[in-house]
Image (cartoon, rainbow, N blue to C red; front, top):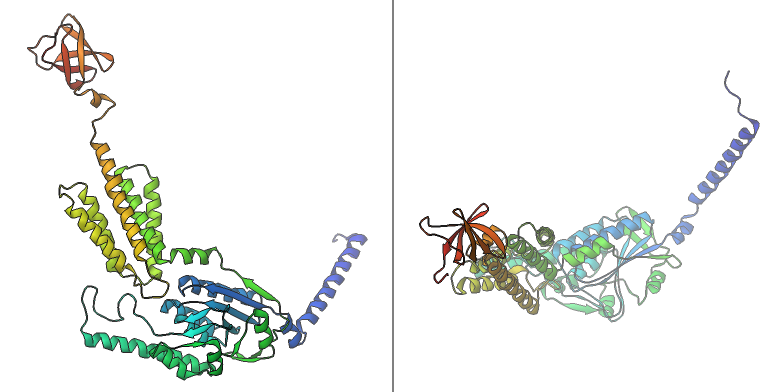
Length: 462
């Protein structure tokens, strides 16, 4: 016979069941509310990025898009101020925009901001293009980085005709890409063409009258009010925005984005590479210390990761490594500075070639190169020379320290002799069997045989 539940427990379970049914009914009513009411409660998610378009910007945008999906945002606003950047990162952002189920509004802000080069492509790709007063866009001509695509190998110059052909191919490809984005959203294709081929730029007012952007807004509230009720054509269908009273959620860059932004900076990547070389160099000078070697290995791995993200010329990396090897070799070879000077020249040339400075926001300044070269020279010639001199000094402890030490014979008994050497009394024997030892004789240690010293008499001993 099954157990019978107490009456109090049965009553409690009935109350709980009733509460769950009431809560489910209320939840179902809320889910079936009118689309307009649900739309007004859906937030606007804002991303703000100021800097060159690179791996950090692409990572930040992708994560922001995921946050927008998580919050069920009705609009993602990409507040942008950029001088341009890398083509690969720009295309990653554009692909994310075009495949996004949430409308994206790229807003060139605040006042005085710009969307140059890669920023212009992102603005054209967005479902909504907006600018703040006194901002500008354009200058979208592509710049070759790391050598022209399909060009000749590093160290060999291509014929002029081939270079011109590759240049035309790059420009034509960029122009067609920007025109396709303009046609997708019904914006001015004429300006897209001139922005690529003639590096033309436009102010916000000119862009609005030229049908390049959709609106001008000074603040996020102005942008939200201007977009309220606008129908946006998406790949999944038409979406109507209700943004006038929508809450605004700002998503700041996370630690991963900040780390990518720092590590992906060319000066930092170059410094990490040199720091890794310094660490391994110190570990070679002092094996077993471990800390310089571990720190150097970590820095080198971070540098290699950064180089995968940046437009790096690997011949520059090779010259940097060659320069360091030559400067280390100078410490061991009697070349009177010739090899060391060649190493410094190779190091400077490698740093100059490492990353093309024409790419906006991705150059290495001459002052930084000079400082890094000076620090490297001081590290290798100064610290390395000091360490080698210390290693060549005579040993001052242990049995080896007794070799060459001088002392005085203190006693001779039954063919055995003792001498006072290095503050201690040692049993001594003559290194030459035919030399007799006598008290008061000055001797010099030739070898150590266990606890017995083999000595030679010093001229003038008494």
